[in-house]
Amino acid sequence: MRILHTMIRVGDLERSIGFYTTILGMRLLRRKDYPDGRFTLAFVGYADESEASAIELTHNWDTASYEKGNGFGHIAIGVADAYQACDAIKAAGGEVVREAGPMKHGTTVIAFVKDPDGYLIELIQENSRQD
Image (cartoon, one colour):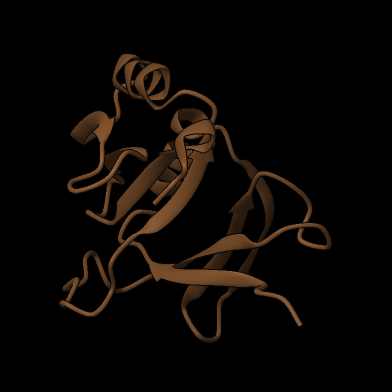
């Protein structure tokens, strides 16, 4: 068994695809419209779905935004250098909400960015993971 994907609902599919592909460097893996159900599914990720997990962006055509609730935390992405990743994300127009630095009560270097729908993405510096 393995994790196939994580699904999040988005208000503006093109904006979200742009964020995940342009700012976070993922690829659009596949996309399909379901006219009878009035929704579109788009899958983004760093590798083919046969090799790695993906993020499913679900766009319900008649819904512009969603409540985040308090159950979902974040999506984590491993990066070689969290400081450099934050600089690149800001330069590309992304929003860094917690600059890179050691996690509270630990030494792992992390940062947080926010996607266009307000979902948090944690960047974890891979060579610093000790906590």
